[in-house]
Image 1 (cartoon, helix red, strand yellow):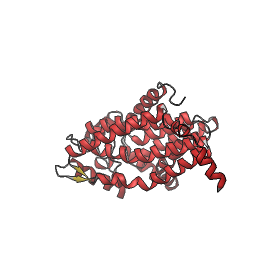
Image 2 (cartoon, rainbow, N blue to C red):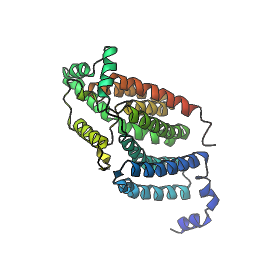
Image 3 (cartoon, one colour):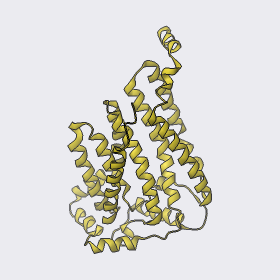
Image 4 (cartoon, rainbow, N blue to C red):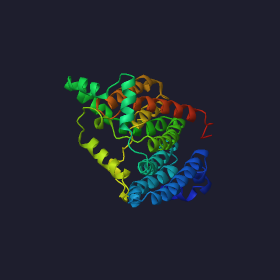
Length: 305
């Protein structure tokens, strides 16, 4: 106990400050403040309520701040990076989710028929692949599980590179997600769509039906309370594909994982079709957006000297 008190007393405040006054921390702080301010204004304009839900993450944030302080006191550089990235991830999860829902309040009508027509022009049918996967139940189950792996993949892509000394990759991953989410929100505001089950012979599952109902509410003229459980309302472009690509790039900073994570990313893209969640043009849009985001983040100078 005495040794701990001595270490705490001898800690130079400037040593703590240096972990926060970095280009990355400043960039993320400015971005977060701008996003929150803009979203509060836009949410009021589009009559979107229930904004207090974004504060539900405060217990997790408080715990992470305590852990971060402990890591700084004990001088664990890699764990410091991991805690900082985790804090930004928790903050941005709700902030970016709200941004997508604000985009869902745009006055543009659903364009599912237009997206289906684009698929038809290239002779692509989501329903065909859904039915094809259904003929092999084990394959169907495996791809459904693969589709749900995007959440743990994101967490691993965020934390593992930093834990293994590749913090730069994790930071670029966070920036990439922010850039991609902003672009996705803008695109989905102009080309909103529910999913192929609204235009093709695909029976929607419970989650897909919930997303459709929520998107229709967002498109109505009545005030709406945000619903974090049905925040995945984007069809075009496929944000699932974008996140899979960004995760693969981040984890690809470790050579031993490069081939495996890209294989998983490809399977996630395929599962977006076999589970009936996306049109073919959604995947194409997601791939293009993923490439644009990867190129954009790669051109940013080193963000942690």
